[in-house]
Structures are given as structure tokens and as C-alpha cells.
Length: 429
Image (cartoon, one colour):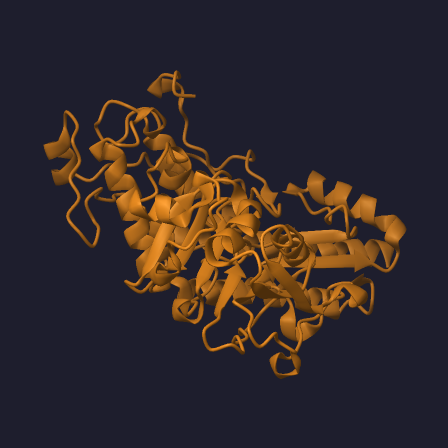
């Protein structure tokens, strides 16, 4: 795409007229963002640096609404805010007067340094990340962190407790077996991962080095609404937050490490974000590969080797968007409203649709459901796709349907899905 002329780039637009009225954050996202609007002074060196600092970049105005965009309910990579995509498109060939794309920048040049520093500053503002925590932009997905976590904070004989509430927690445990002594202190597998345990009933290992959870199970739609405390006062809580990262406020100080793949709520695939308390850095096992050593990345400000530059840039634009919406408190309100109308539709269908997850721990992000008449599921997915609602097929290990309704899924998308579900039931019930 970098070779395309600017004249060939057209602004993508949304296909539902009512959508633009329903999703107010598209209007509130600043189309004129100063590249210097950070909590610290950041310089940009390019031919028109003075102009870039003085005059905000103008994003072309939206053109007529088209039918090209769909409502994408994929679990990840997932839908991104249209206004973020438009801004990235406008800056694709020439980033803010520098004469080159972000994809072409040196990761050690001042231009990209300004991008990654602002992305970190905005993420810290969104989540209220304390100063004694490092923020790392890495690669390899959350799956790589399944190994990195025990390698960095455990000795081979250290005990680690795992609460397994779904497939991803189970994968994390199985990987940790190679590097420490993990214990599954609770598993929801026998009940098909539909619950989260009461914390006072957990039999934690007294000397466990840490307690690991998956805060939101993408496949099974189970989400922690609050968090357990490690029994060992010297232990830390660790959370895989890949599929609910930045979907609501979180008290970072409760955790030793939070890690998340970006490709669900905050950007494209290729970026993994780690937030780690600084005193936990620097104790990696000797066998730890250099690319998994948190100290290496922290000491080099996530620039030890070439990072996923364009992905980090996109995450930065998403962070700006979330801040423009009023922060994660406002974002959570929108997410709750979307989830509420979808779960209400399922629960009020007299059994035509069913969600197996215990109501108190249902995910705001990933909503799995089945049809009482399972033979209709393929038709449901086919008809929904014809109505431009795609990626509703459930994970291959579970079946049924799954609607992932991340931050960027507009209320209008959920409303259209609900209307379709009600119509489908009327025709097939």
C-alpha cells in the first residue's frame, strides 16, 4: 500500500446511515491531533517539523455512506474504530509532513520515538498505570507470555497457582509446566468452563510465587468481575487480559503483571502489551531467551530490536480515541449497554437461544450462544452474513455462535444483530 499514490486512497465509510448517529464517539474523536500532545516533551524531526507542530493534521472529511463496511463480530483480529482507520489512511503515505509512512520509519528515529512514547503516555493515562510499573510493547502474542511469565519471575522449582476458567488459562498452565511447578487450584473444565469460583473457597498453595488468571476467556465468554488476592503475601497476581484489555477501568496496583494481545480491543495483530511492576524485572532464569527477558525490553524502552512499528502506531491512535470518548469509565458504560441488550435477547427467547455461562460472570466482550435447534445454526450464520454481520460462528472447540462485541463494535451493530435474532426466531421458532 505504501507504493500507492495519495490520489488512489479514498476515505472508507460506514454503510448504515443510522450508525453514524448512534455512535457518538466517531464525532468526538479528534480529527486534528497534535503529534506533540503528550505528558512530556517529544520532538519530531522531519522537513516540516515546525509546520507539523504548529498546524494540526487535517483528516479528509467523510464521504457519502457506502455499503462496503460490515459489522464484524470476529474474536480477533477484530473490528477497529472507523475513524481510527480513516486517520491511519490519511497519514499512510506521508506521516504528518515527514515525507514517509510510519511503515518506512527507522524505529530509532525521532519520528517513531514520538509515536511510541505518546502511545505509552496515553495508555498510562487510560489505565492509571503507576510510575513503578513498566509498559512494554512486545511481539509474539499472549501465547508467548505463557512462557515469558514463569521464565522471568520463577525459579524452576517455584510453585505457581493457576485458576483455569477456559481454554486460554489451560494453555497458560500447560506451557508453565516446562519452566516452574504450576498447580491448577481450580478448573471449570468439568462444567464446560461456564463459571468462576468463589475466591474464599480456593485452596491456594501457601508458598506459591504467583497466582495466574485469564481475566476474560475469549472462547467460553467467562469474565472475572473482581479479582482474587494471592494467599502468600509475597506473591503477585498475574492476568492475561487479552480480550478485555482497555474495556473498563482496572486497578493496576492489584497486579504484578498484566499482559494482552492487542488484536481484540486496541489495535491490529502483532503487538503484545505487558504492564509489569518494576521490582519483578531482572530475575529471569538463565535459560530465558533474550527476546523473552523483560529486563532487556525495559532497559531498551521496547526498542531492543525492531518492534511492530505500525501496529504500535495503530494502538496509539486507538488510545487517543478511547481518551476522546472520556476514558475507560465511559467506554465501560457503552460496553455494558451493548452486552445487556444482547444477553436480554438471548434470555427472553424462551430457550430458542441459550447462553451457557453463569449470569454473574458473563463476558462483556465475547457472547457465546447456541440455538435449541442446532440444525439451524449454519442457516443463522449464513443469513447473518447476507445482512452484513460476519464472523458469528463459534470457536471450533465449542460450536454454536459467538458475538465478540469489543470497544469498537458500535451499539448499532449489536442492535442490528438483536433485530436479526428476533426476526430469525419469528421465522424458525
